[in-house]
Amino acid sequence: MGKAASSSKQPRATLSWFLKGASNVVSLPALILIMSFIGFGALTAEAGLTVWQAMFLGITTWALPSAVLVAGAIINDVPFYATVFAVVLASVRLLPMTMALVPMLKSDKTKLSSLLLSAYFMAVTSWVFAMNRLPEIERENRVPFFLGFALTLAMVVVITLGIAHSLVPNLPVPIAAALIFLTPVYFLLSMTAAARITSEYWAIGFGLVLGPIFHLITPDTDLLWCGLLGGTMSYGLSRLVESRKGA
Image (tube, rainbow, N blue to C red; front, side, top):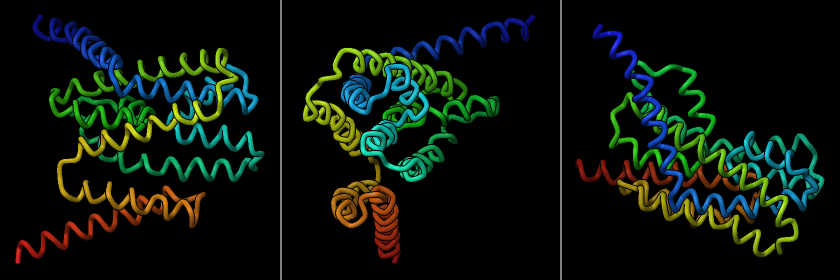
């Protein structure tokens, strides 16, 4: 009887934590991302995509920078192989974020399929949200909580994208660009607020300095080289400072 009662409570608990995660979509981060996708909706309309193609692009590409790359490539007639390569490079930045988050999500009872689904919805907004909120939650409840937030956010964003594509195709380019630019501004402020150790602040600082430089030198791979060099420099500097303190 005890095991049966326990097993019957588990689905209810999972649903409860899923709904708790979903309720966090009503927040400033989600609002900023939604506004950014309004601008992206106008961009997909300019690229000549249908509303269904735009929504498909949004849910399959998910991370906004990669989706913007695809739409921009369509507008500028960039070859398919070059577009794929650019999207892959833009998405590499999510790999270390995923590697940092998955151990926080995983428990003894976590299924591989749940972790893979969570990894699919990895983006800066969901990562910042998870890193700030998951430590407060018991480990076995983290996956449903995270998926509740991520899945609901994805649904709202894609619906917003479809509406924006249909209603604001003639949105002035400066306004559309400004709406899209809200996302990186939010990312910068959120990651600065979430930083806990000195090396993380150094990494942000190096990124701000190196970003414009690499954009002028190699605009196609600027994000990759900026992250690689900036992260390496911040790590090396932190190790140097620690070794001197130890001495």
